[in-house]
Image (cartoon, rainbow, N blue to C red):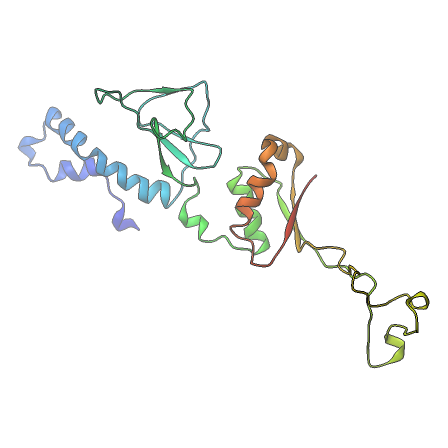
Length: 225
């Protein structure tokens, strides 16, 4: 991607005749090309590579153009202007308020890393720990345990006992019998301190993100430790 790595200030200065490369003229030129550089950085830096910004603080005053990371792990930028079109600052207004903020990235993790994530155990664990900016989340595969079921094999020694009544056979078929004691294919283990920090929506937040990589038909549960 080196072909796309450039600085508009440098390019603008190089394309300007030497006789016109005076400080005031260059300052004006830098102002003109700044929006282009901002778009370049947003796509090839924040979106592609990723960038971690400070978490939103309700008591902090944010100036026009400043970016923060909110609870949904998205990146927001202050874009508020007053009725005269003058850039303003923001205090105590959550980033989801579109009058004061603009979402510039759905997630702080760049696509270079996200394309590597999958339902494979190690990559799945990496995705969870990276997204929630923590460590200690791990996955354990579960094996379905079988309860009382009727078994028929090629020999009587390896088959269930058959009798006239289920009172006389330990293993039997029944419409209401529940044979699978474990319905979860795997379990996501989460440190309890981190889990608590997520508040009442902890299960929802973890499940929503895990479902991005969970294979269709697979079921999982969340357990703290």
